[in-house]
Length: 362
Image (tube, rainbow, N blue to C red; front, side):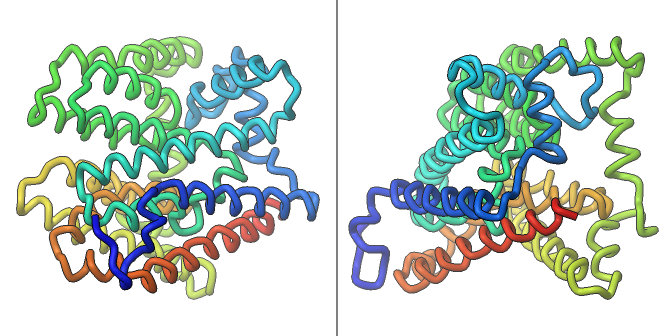
């Protein structure tokens, strides 16, 4: 890509190095902020994962919504560092390294799918509003889960099917929210990209083994779906569909209304892009959008922010769409637009870090 005075400066042609450097600064700033106010991230789900990593045999007592992959990564890292690093810092370091991997994978994927929007797409994915870098400092399983899914997508684009099966098998053990994405991506690969059925079977073997073991341990064959039906899918505000969106919008209080508005924007954008790619029978980007639409429709107001955490996957179909419109992709490459977007996205990371402290300190 050639650069003019109106586009990104030439030194930025070496992306995603700049994005990683900026993300490192933001990550360290949030860590220092947490330390300065004495905020510990070892609480809620993070505490659950850390506790599980210290005794992997606790699986049968863990939440049905959690998988053992992230605790296993923490346990392995603790052994490799011979217990010299505290659990919280170790989890933050792991999430940061997976974030770096995800940034590079995003750049590589966009180079194949939509090179015209690679730079801005990598930036948006890395600093996805609120959750891009913030969830490296508050180390949930989201960041490693995203990195594994991007690894599977990269392998699919290169038709490296055993690599796809291996990464998918690992990803299925990290985070349950990504299951619809893996499933639809696997179907696209199986029916339109040349993957064989045995690759699909191989990718599900570890999950199947773990699922059956947990079903036997819990004496409940429906242990995953039963949990999510009760916790995340049962309407809490009286709306059969879009409970998370409508329940927040109609709460008529500022914070829930803003949440509902953000979710509505995600729904509308995902719906618009899904219709666009459905009409063109482009199944790969469609497979990245349908799970978001399903979550928007099915999730209640206890799981509404899950949609925001997953929405950065929409970067890939959005970049594909923008690349089809030269005026839009050209405007996004303008230097002024790029830096304005950079500043805005970085600010959201600090806003969400502050909100996390306020929310988790209640």
